[in-house]
Length: 508
Image (cartoon, rainbow, N blue to C red):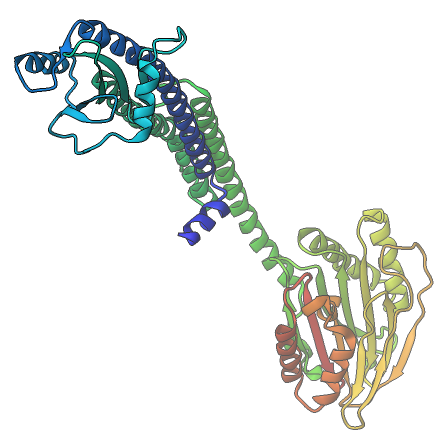
């Protein structure tokens, strides 16, 4: 029972709260008016009882005042007893001033009169005082019975006998019983009408509220065709609310369908964009001497990360060959970032026609992006150029420092940033970084989506973890090393907030 009460107390259902409050108020209301009616009627009954009791005694005295009571049983006594029964007096005793019981009804069991009754008899037989009552009357308001003692004439001249009787005024008792019955009926009727009213309120209000709630829940779970359905013939506030809800639901369904259609179209266009973007990515087999391994994971269909490889020949010395590596990471992700990287790749083709020096290429790219996008977008980028002898030069525009490592010795070299990201400053003089590599040396280039992927407590994967993984797996193949790094990242990251790209190549 206590668990049920606790559940009711904890319930936030408006129906339950109103139901409990209404039941309590209804019970208080019914009890209050029942008690008020009972108290009022009882008071009237008591007053009526007092009035009728006095009138009854006076009437009995008037009827019996000329009658004499014999000491012996005879016809005169029978007539007197008949007079008593006429007044519905069945319980009586007749005694003299000494307390001797002369006559009594069969249901009277006393054999002598008590002193208190004798004293009362003496008081009413005293005719010397005008203030002395001619009878003694005792009223019992609990059961509406009366005890009265009146003096009577004896058959012997001058003798005074006393009639002592106990009776119930039946009409008062009947009315009291009827009052109990009426109060009971009123209480039951009050409970019944309040229950009917509660059922009416439930059907008129809460049943429609429940329908609205159910329709809302269905819409929330994805059923956009859910509607509030009832007769709508009352034209009250809930009908207006239900009509408004159905109108809103229809509008939401229409809007969602429109959005879904647009999303499908956008998704198709993004797939096309992805295919177009992948066309810009180089074919690794053309650079098989470098054992190129790549990992490319866009956050969406299209990516803001891009990389490309180039082969150059010295126009003056045809035998001298160069290989170029470009990697860029546009700010943000998705379509806008993909457009920036696409513009960047297209611009390189015009720039390298004039010069293949990495710092020149980076500087010109920075100017192009800055002029076209007016600082709305920017990108980090790095361009490497290496000749057949392993001499490497590089320029880095705000990109994560690529890592050059030598598996044979465990050495590592970092190509740190030479200036701001592309598009952040015009005509910036980017420095040129140089390194002499050997056959077997490896170059690892990656986007910040790798190192900045969050784990527990927003801890980032970090450059330190990447370096440790490289140190511990330097002798693994290029594809195997990228797989190890990716698997560790996937275990660590709770989600991915940016594109993740990695390129690993080996100096031939």
